[in-house]
Structures are given as structure tokens and as C-alpha cells.
Image (cartoon, rainbow, N blue to C red):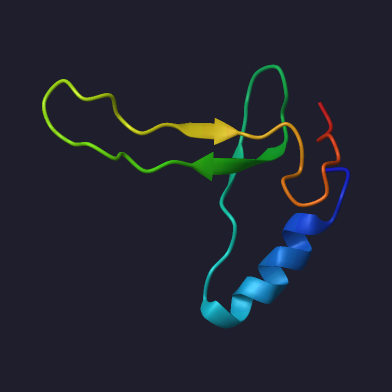
Length: 67
């Protein structure tokens, strides 16, 4: 990653026993990316499932992630 925002935020979240979720991506880019999880609003048969998105820019400072 090109910035240290994840480390900074995780240090602040540590006192609440929490951290940002990161995922290792394989294939075209082999490095950690921040993952933004979503919540499914409506549940039930035939309803679309919640998704997760891998961010290409830091949501805190706007710097583009490497790769």
C-alpha cells in the first residue's frame, strides 16, 4: 500500500478490540487490499446476497493502492 492509513486506523481501533478487514488477492495483483463489506438489507428467497468490494483507493486519504 502506498499510505499508512490502515495501520493508523487499526492502532486507534485496537482499544475497541477491532481492526479493518483486509484480504489477500491472488492473480493479477498479489498484495493486500482493503475490503469493504456490505450488509444484506432484505432477506429471503430470491433476494440478492450481500457483496464485498476490494478498494483501489484508500478511503481515508484517497491515495491509489499499488497494483
